[in-house]
Image: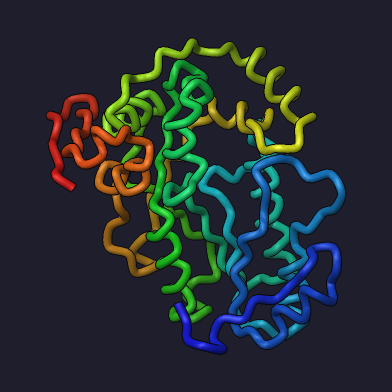
Length: 274
C-alpha cells in the first residue's frame, strides 16, 4: 500500500472542521467514503468535506455514492446519496461522482451476512435483483481515477457488477459454497420486518435497519457500467470469488471440498477446485 511515511493516519471528527482541514490540507486528491447505512440524527455533513477540500486547495475530489442514488427513492439511504451528490457538486463542481452497487469482500455485509442471517435476504421472496461488485475492483477504480486528468472525469461514473442476480439465487450460491442446506426460513412480511427492524434500533449493537428492509424490495438500477473509463476491463463475478470469503463458514469436514456453483437460470452447473 505504501512505504514508511506514505500512509499517515490522522484523527478527525466530522463535527470539527479544523480536524478535517488538517487532514486534507496537504492532499491533491480527496476520496470521500464517509457514510452510514442507517439514519444519523445529530449532524449533517453532506457537502462539508467537499467544501473544506475546495477551500484547502485540493485539486481532485471523488465522492463515492451508490448505484441506486435517487432523490425520489423510497429509501432514505438512496435519497440522501443523491442529495449528497448534488450538494458536493454545488461546492466542488469539478468533483467526480462514483456510484458502485452493493460491495462484496472480506467481512462484508453482503455474502457473509447471507451466510449468517439468510432470513433477512428472503424478503420479497428473494425476487429483488442486485448487481454486486467486488470491493477490490472498486478500490482499483478509485486508484486509477487519481491518474486520469480531472477535466476528463468531472462527471458521474456507474460501477455495477457484471451480472444481475436475484437474492434467491445468491442464497442458493452461499448455501452451495458453504456446503449447507438452503435456508428454509419463512418469508417475513414487509410490515413485520419493518416493525422488527424498528425495535432493533433500541439495542446498541448493529441490527437490520428499517431502511435496509425497504432496500430489500428495490431492484438495482439497470444502467450500463463505466468500467472502461476507470481502466477496469471486466469486474469480477460473485461466483469466481465466493469461496474466498465464505470458506470460513464451512464445517471442518467440508473445508477443502471442491466448490460447486449452482446454475443460474438456463445455465449448466460448474465445478471449481479451489
